[in-house]
Length: 288
Image 1 (cartoon, rainbow, N blue to C red):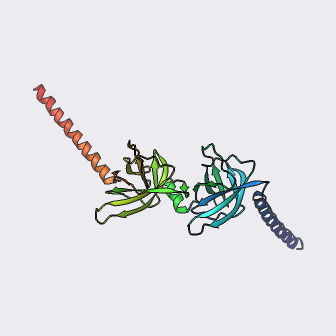
Image 2: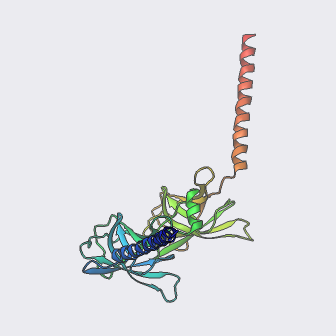
Image 3: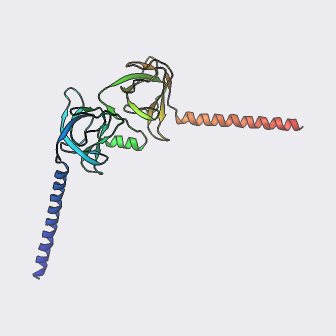
């Protein structure tokens, strides 16, 4: 009888000590991962949404830690978060057109900043800014990408706006990507109906580095995949003049509805059937 209580007490102590050891190891692993490893230089990045990013969170390149988040402050007068990154001095050749993205470790892990190298030969200097950023992904955006919406990097350092009018925008919504040659170059800023012209006026926000788009280019509303979300595709023209802030894309192609596609298919099918029937009659007539 005396062995059972002692056995229960021993088991309980073992479980408590096990959980204590796991908790201690977890805290020590986190502190080691977020500690500074030597001299560093500071780089700024501006994000539209930082999610649950915290100070001292890791900064990684190709999954390898290269620094940590030094500070996070809200830009006065703007809805952007200024994040300062302390990068180890030995990683001083980061191209200035690299993209900084906020990722999540695993499914429910902590968030960190991942840097994807660009193609510029100029490295970002101490005190410089990474203009291209992608914010922390929200659940709605992740579901949108799952269905083929895609996404673009936020260039919070500057963009210009152009307008386009469509007779039908389908399910196009604010925030949808604007693409050229399949590459995201901006996003849809607003979609509203014109009560006078009775069409849809769409405002497109385009990254300033894509400032060499001919002004006779065409804008079309396409669908990602079969049942994906819709986006605006720009097909460059041949004009020597380029689009400027406030210009309007005159050539547009509206969204195709499933009813229109089915109708076109049936019409084309019926016309071919008629041609086949008429040709067969002609053949029989010539035989007689």
